[in-house]
Amino acid sequence: MSSMDVAKSAGSSDPAIGLRAVASLRRLAEQLESLQVDRARDLGWSWAQIATELSVSKQAVHQKHGGGRATAVRTR
Image 1 (cartoon, rainbow, N blue to C red):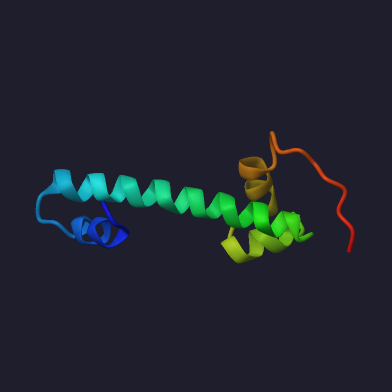
Image 2: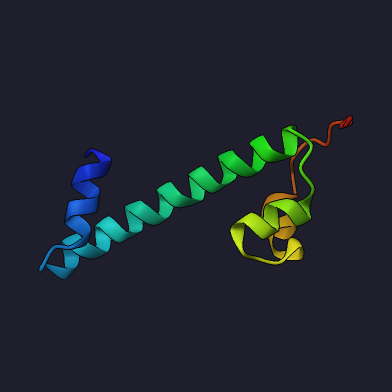
């Protein structure tokens, strides 16, 4: 199913279809967030900078995305 189909399904009058679409969109948003956080960290962004863009605390973004990732030495 394409992203346009999912977006259309989110507005369905059938709750089962709408809720499945919402779940798909949530998974997509999580994947995009992880991708962009990784990209920002690779470019040397601080947790505070990322948190500001996501409108969350730096602790929240670090807790969600900071664990399990190999830490590389970053130069500015």
